[in-house]
Length: 419
Image (cartoon, rainbow, N blue to C red; front, side, top):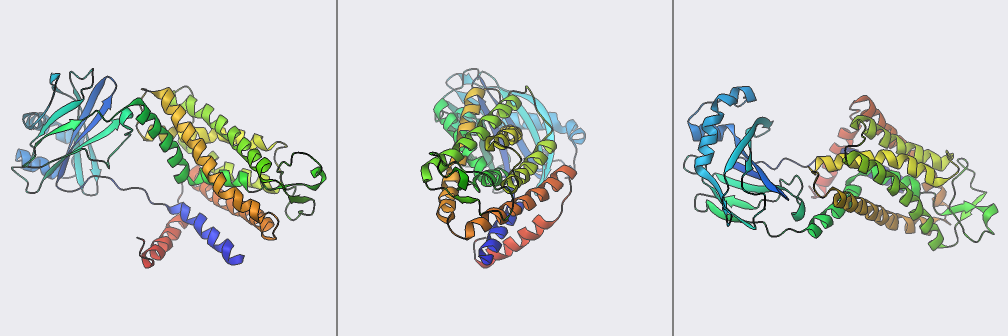
């Protein structure tokens, strides 16, 4: 059992150090990013400084700022207008330039020129795109067109899926915009809710804290017709507790508790997404971490008489955390009701999936000597992890344990040939 607990601890600690995905940009590429809305299309060109130097015959430094690039922006805009165009059955769609920005990645400094595509109040089914930039100056150069946002196509802050690749021999291509529907966007929002639960380690741990004590009840209630799971009054006092006798009432009870969690985070998620009320992200993330510790402590020494209270109260803070996800994916005001409905439905499905995976294991172990250890040690482990996160988030410090664990994780996975 000791070895199993050590393995479980390692799995939880690895969660501290899950790496972030890398940026999609690559050398010898320039980009057209497009955002397709229900009543118009926006876009932007992105070019690296070395490519701009080659295209315009300049000698700009790599560490350039927005103010320093501005004198050359008219020349760059003209260059792109001469070598790029958009056309459909509605006619030619003129490029109306807007903002200029500069940002630095490891592989170089990129200049970003945003624009509106005119005459797209009604989005065409098909766009003929011409992109003939740098092919005569930079060998092996490629142009990438990426639809960054299209709610109906289920694309949000996309940088991984390339729609068109332009080369010297293929500098005019058609962009199909017909693969889009309200249902597809709605289903994508459901999947995003499910996916966020699966990658949201803090949300998973909170759910685990709620599920751990779900297969025991007070012996004095044994004659009751409905065996409800209950909380431990203290560590080591298992003599007054017994395993639930029926699977169905117990799991229904757990799903009821999770439903209260869902209702509460739906409230704050909606308030934040609709910009009615919000809280600072640092405060929210700190409270989410603390909620895991309190939910786990509730397993050892009850904080509330009713189990649903802790799920509802802390679910309010988790809702603000979910709202930051919607902001990160670049969600706009269009189809907001469907977006909220789909995302919340996905979160609920993800939570139910986790419960369905964990609860049968606990139910099977409930009559063994291992269950009490899993409950107590598991709760203590959750408290330790959540306090670690709370300190890092609340005080904006790096305790370095995550980096250490991640290095071990990389070495182990490398030895196994998995990374």
